[in-house]
Image 1 (cartoon, helix red, strand yellow):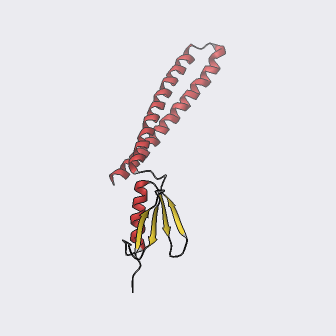
Image 2: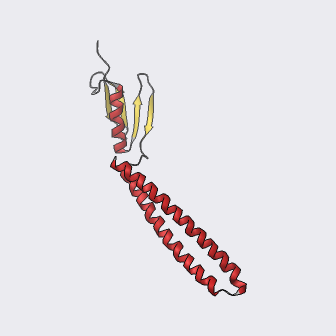
Amino acid sequence: MEKNRWSVERDKKGFIHVRLNQKTGNFKTKAEAIDMARKMAKGNRTILRIHTDKSGYDIVDYTSIQTSNEIFDKTLSDVKLARAELTVAKVEKQKRKSELKVAHETEHYIAKRKYDLAKERLKKSKMNLKNALKNNKRALKTINN
């Protein structure tokens, strides 16, 4: 009695297939073949097709999966942007504060409103930076593990 053998193959389009192949199958179990095919599909960012014993197949799309290094780079970029936004918000707040000090009575209300908006922007920028640093720290832990 011949056991089922499974193979992992790549087609012309670059898709990876897991098929039942009695003659040239490299894997004894379907689970081993699927595990290897998933690693290949993630590494090559392609589509994985797992063929069943019947005529159908399941599709798993790994084209949009990001690696942990790419996620870390993105979070690092977000931290840099948040720091730049915080710097801009601080400068704007100082500018609005000086405008408020020299504003005449008629312009005082408008200057006060602009100053309040600048303070709010600074507060949001600080929260953005805090969240970006937290996400970056989480991504760094993912890389190290």
